[in-house]
Image (cartoon, rainbow over all chains, first blue to last red; front, side, top):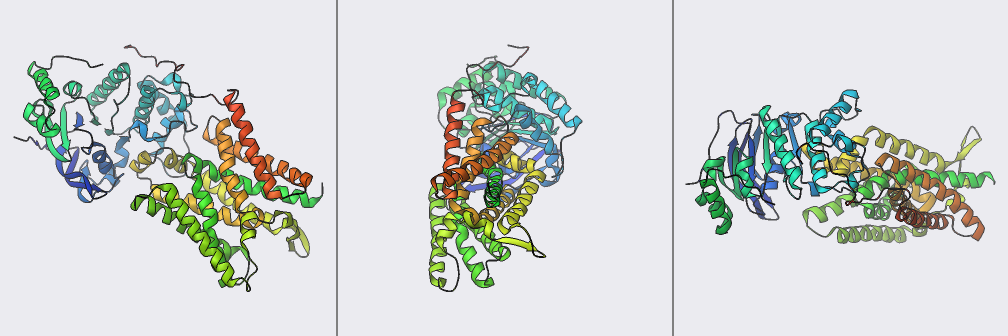
Length: 264
Length: 298
């Protein structure tokens, strides 16, 4: 019934991962492996532990039980190959900085503690901004950006890291439709270059268009597998409880062989 | 203007520069109240170090203060993060508690040591010039001045060398942690600097002016600047101006020098607020007028 598909040579392995906040488990005994070179959606209802899962993988929060392996190694060994995009709302955008300063932070990831940026770094910053369509905004105050532009800046910062694996926390939350479209285009392009992208996402309607693989979470792991196998009415109901109208719609949609539909 | 006045202004300017640099990080971390807390919480450390060493020599006293400052930070962090208390309540509780311990210790040892709360809170900057350092009987200026020069070298060196780490952990701690940077380490490093600055400054200018500099100068600079480096320099500049104008205000009204400097810091803030609201200096966030990104697809 529940589908948890294991993969060979996984890019990421999560074993018995449990994180407890305030005596409440945020994620409980989660086990899965993820394939390389795919766009992977982490989905589940509010408070199902999606963000916590990303933070635990990156070691931003400590796991109470369990461990994570990235590229078959401890995260500490491979941090330079992994890039994390936090939720846009988690920072103060009134910080006095320009767009290029924020993107440049991605370059310090690969540098020693005392280093300064060189010409190559600056070039990579410009290039990263170009990829998200923000090259004209390099000198803009970050306080002046719209939500969609803030998200692009965060993604540009991750691109500047030149990583192999990207973990993105809700990159589509509160962004306009054109930004969402250009972000997914960029993700596809990155996937086609062999990168792996793990994306926390909310919208069930777009999920089957966006993702190759889906991890369904509801504090516990509900399912992990190719999107077509995971998106069945039974499994979705298990993850989301009984909000059936939406779920049956999504299932219908899938039954119609991914009838293309855009929300908003 | 006599040399005494110059030494007083120079000493106050050094305090202002130290506080402005570190305070700029604090304000962006929304931790300015922590500087207030530390400036009071260092008292028990000072008293204990003073009592043990038997002198007002700067080194043991600074060490005592730095320890109690970091202890206060630890106490506040533990109450907030681990015990889930509200941050303002944790700060209010911790610093009054530690300061009160210091007050009790002073009154207990009162007859034996030459130290009082008034000195800690208000300082005695008017007397700075009287306590001079002499090398081979040649005066090289006030002791306080040179101590603060060393303090400034430490603060500037710390911020210059580790600027990227400090900015990254300030702006986006989750991202910094994802890069393997210890948020806790940099927090305590910063708070160690705040403790050091507070204690090296308090004897000259008192805790009140130190807090005024820590909070007021960066808050004013924030209103006037576009990037963080610029903000730090503006904050330092405002501090020097406040020291000069404050001295003359005090001379004019024949009143407290530290008090007058604090008043100038406040006036600077309200002037900057008026200026920035008129939109002349800092470009205000305006989400309506933002240019849309250029995209092939739209």
